[in-house]
Image (cartoon, rainbow, N blue to C red; front, top):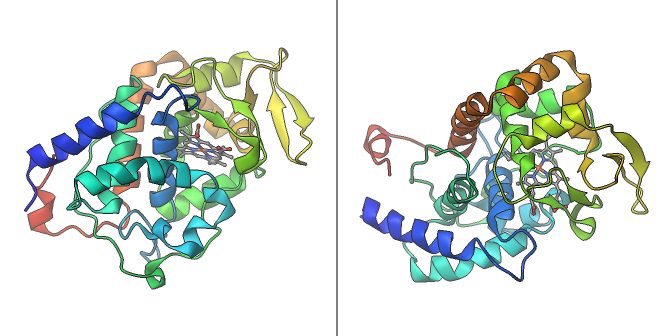
Length: 272
Ligand code: HEM
């Protein structure tokens, strides 16, 4: 049985590979995206999807267009898995997201091991469960309510767009949301409220919002957090109160990573 020291050793190995001169922004932001996409397929009604199973190892889910580029994160973690072959991919991917948040200056996200890898494709959820960046607040609420999240949790989770950027060849969008894409902070909310956003159509055919100097961007789905009055109230709160954002983000991201993970009273105590 693996001990908390074993998980600490994995954490240390993840930490070491996050900064990388050859990769724009290092691996931190994409590890967060991997942990989120591995978990965000959960459906509370059918209790399918989620981070248990690590079903993104199989063709159906890895070829979902929403997951374009995440092979980079999975491949970067492979040597760590080879060094610690006892850890499940589900635990490794979610732990990498948690370690990345912390390494980039964010809060401590509660995390527990216990995900068991599926052996074949049949455990994979259907494609199309992750949110579509072109869509509005109605779609966002539909997708996140399906996972079991309320408005406040949804607004907290989207704050992770303080990290990283869009890559034309992965999603069709381009650019970062903030001027500090390798720091976890509340700048997503601050900039969403303070910049003047103009809609632009890219040569890839997608539309996104750019600030006046064309230095940062917002996806149509991000902009819905500005136009929807209920979302906006919470955005305003997090823009003013970084600690409230950190607390709510840690709880919501921790909940996201737990979706679909079977817990018995034994594993319940196996925190690390
Ligand atoms: C309405 C919900 C969301 C939509 C539509 C959305 C969409 C996107 C898109 C299109 C990208 C760009 C991918 C690329 O081109 O590389 C992206 C990147 C990213 N997303 Fe989201 N996302 C959503 C929610 C979230 C959530 C809940 C999290 C985490 C809690 C998250 C974390 C990230 C991170 C960290 C990146 C940057 C990855 C990198 O730099 O490689 N997103 N997202």
